[in-house]
Image 1: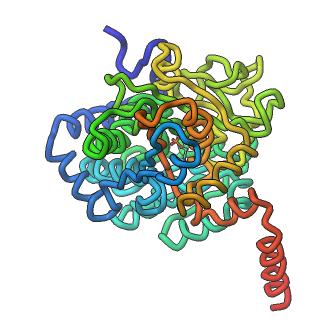
Image 2: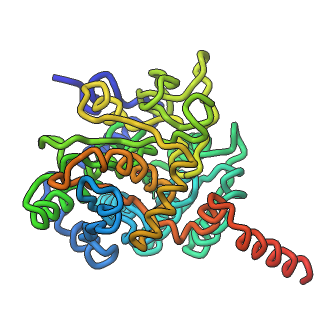
Length: 409
Ligand SMILES: *Cc1c(COP(=O)(O)O)cnc(C)c1O
């Protein structure tokens, strides 16, 4: 019997002694929820009435014609409330918090999307909410901080370390240790100590369940390949989990940043720059130096620049079940432009990583083949980041004029 929470040699639960009882309580609540069909039904009802589920599977007819190969379908996680698949996880954990009878949630956030999703869930369920965010990210991602605060959350800028996501995670754990009884830590992706990778994947598996049913209904066949971007790995695990037992090729696409050869990237599984380690409560591939110090990562997509990756994906790479590649910033912006023009869809910069690899491979497949790209989120709400990526001169001028307007007040 493998130990619970292990995927091959990856995963586990490396937590301080003081949190052991809290994790046991969480594992139990999760196991009970999983065994209770009513829980999943309540979840489905909530997601249907609050977050636009089931999300459509859209046939990208123009892109298909453009590439002249496989028929391209897009799973529309961008249509979730708050604009990304993150809603699937936070609303699910929210229901679990209610079940555990707790009244306060905390979360880490990098770019701020998970923070906004958690603050939204807390507003809906009436939970007290504190979000930990690196001081640098607070400065970079003001629009998301603005919304978190409007939603009633307290946003705490973290001034430790590199003042980014990994420091925010450490701070959230510190909070949890001091307030375990009434607090639940809503971890944002399929990483961290057991049961988080499994639990987050379970809530996100709604993507794959729907996509499998939809593609069969629509085309009468299973897809040849599925593409998903990989930050922590939750949207990828969500869609992949619906097809693990099928003869379907699964492709994870990481942030290639300025190019794998430059070191300025966040490719943990698609490059040989990452190594096995234990950090932040679990064992996986981390981008770290020989002393175990985490490296700086880079990506045009703020949601993909995490140093670790889901232990489940590390395992699926090792067993050869999932193939990994990386997309550079330049390729991502090009794929995003093309998708906007051809389909009128605006994927998030994160999601566009999956589009890059799909576009490379679609022409090599036949029109009899179907491929699915998981559009994890939408880009229009991230106009600051997207406009920066496009280096749009009109937008820059607009910001300058706005700044002048404020200075004059
Ligand atoms: C957060 C985010 C991601 C990365 O997270 P995963 O856990 O890897 O899915 C990808 N796409 C969007 C739109 C996001 O907001």
